[in-house]
Amino acid sequence: MIQSSKPQQSLASRRIFTPLIAASSLALLGLGALFPGPAAESEAAAVPASGQWRGELPSSEASQLSWWSSNDGGEAHSTALAAEQQILSSAELEDGWLLLGQQGQDLALWRLPEGAQAQIHAITGGDEEERSRWQAQWDGAWKLEPPALSRAGLMRLQPQAVSHRGELLGLAWLEGPEMRSLEVRWSSWLGEAEGWGPVITVAKAAEGTQTALSAAVDSSGAPLLAWSAFDGQDDEVLWSRREQGASDEVRWTSPQPAFEDNQVPDIAPRLSVDGRLLAWSRFDEGVGGYRLHVARFEGEGFVNLGPVAGSGSVLPTFERPLSAGSLEESEIQRRGESESYLLYRSVAASGWELARIASDGRVLARALAATSNRERSRRPVVLEAGPEAVRFGWTAASVPETVKGKSAEALATALATSVLTTAVPWQSADPALGLRSDGAEDGGLR
Image (tube, rainbow, N blue to C red; front, side, top):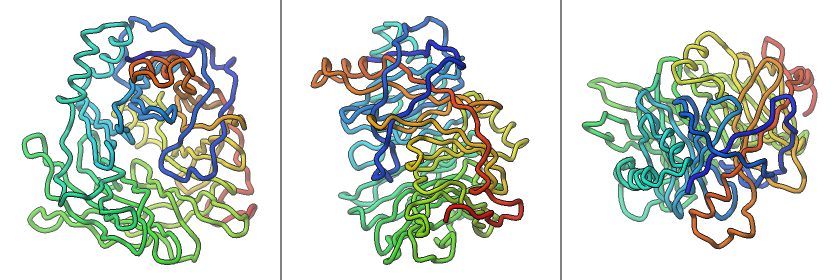
């Protein structure tokens, strides 16, 4: 069953609080539970097409799919997923959305058309016929077969779609017999008639684990990949870019380190949607913890712009605020602006922090949503990044004792009855963690 929710408080009056995450969650997904907010009854108004699909883990007992609409206040509409299904990311295309996830240890893809979010809204209103139609489409019509598996017995993990101006270019993922033998794979999307192209190996198995795959396009529209790989001593960030060869042959550059070997781990790389910036966490012996860095891609490699946060800054993602509107609106704004929004977990500050970053790596402002030490948190949705404040949102809370052990339908009802939102004012960037315009470090924490 699917339930809708809408925050009931004004921006100025919302209470600010976020839960604590364990330092061990250097995984790609945030886990945990949040405080329940007031339940809201669903409305009959149509849900606008602008918004974001989001896979969430509101509890250890179920994963769910949520549609966050760009309505004032930030509405969320959610449904529980089948056992072993998990949505990891989504890509907005000209004619709908591509949802990427896993079912067990294999890829799972869904192609949702325009209007799918309106179905969620209809189901929320108690439309049983719409609920049955959604389930049938989700299980069948909307499923997109992934690229062919090279041989049986291999796991396929961390799918990443690459799109440019609303057009799907291809799919990247990790594949191998076990976690220490994963290779980076790629398949181009050739269109509805032809489907996926041949599977190409971008990077063969390294000396140890390859993980944290991230994908984007560079300024020319070429797919760009970054990931971390163990080199026998520590983790390093590697990257590769697709090149169009003679006779339309698809080939990738040889994987190469983004930076010189520094004898310390570099983990969890994340590319901005335009491939202009790379964020990752580097172990800093001076502060005794991981510290977030940013680099700029300059066509033939990356230039390290330095640290942008203090010790214990992990799990970075570049975000597009929900209020930014549709893909076309966002593209127009991006071409006229040079700032990015970087969301990350601050273990030291016990919260999720959003940094507004200039193209030269300077942090212009920060907004920290502090946590409660009694709860764990998941990555929030950035509902709005205004001139004065940032508004974050989460769905649902811990599984109530009254529904534990019951059906997924009952569980979904319990998990998606509320939205928690927090309004956090922007703070001036700490000059001790900033960069001068020439890219040199100003000093500060080491």
